[in-house]
Length: 179
Image (tube, rainbow, N blue to C red; front, side, top):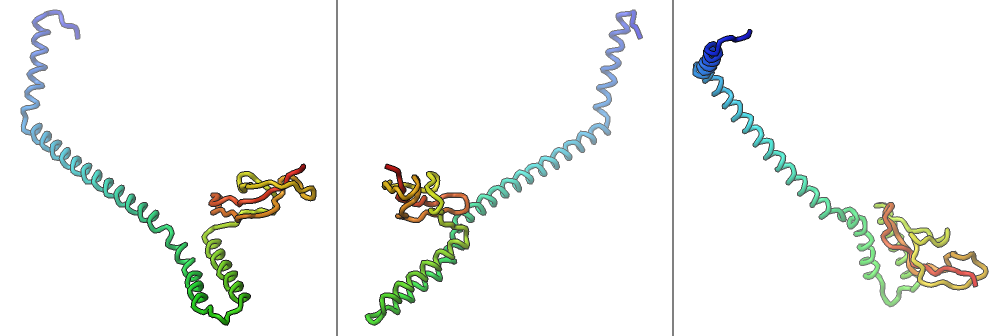
């Protein structure tokens, strides 16, 4: 609708203003406003509770993570304790009449028991029979040996070990070289 008269324009805008201002003063609008405030307060309370729950969960997970790191070695220690018990038993049983062969046999049995305990949790000995590999072996010396291919492992000074895919200690070896 086109307004020709300036007074009509003014009059229309006053009507609009009057109509909108009377709507906010109605009792029904006040109750709606109060209801919105109540809804907002309820949502705010829910938000605060959820936030607190989330913070508590983060703290609990952090404590659990710390406990996992703190007590991660428990199963390893439990698997090694029988070998320690056997060491104590062997030391008590050794006397002047004990033969050296029996002591050596007892030490070999203890070594086997310890290795089996560690293998049960994933420890593996690094292979030294397949030749020198820089990522698995640490060569401390090289010796000229015409009977062996270059890079062959001639002697193992210290055995190397890995836990699954992680190298714990590389094998310390002596390797052959050509003249």
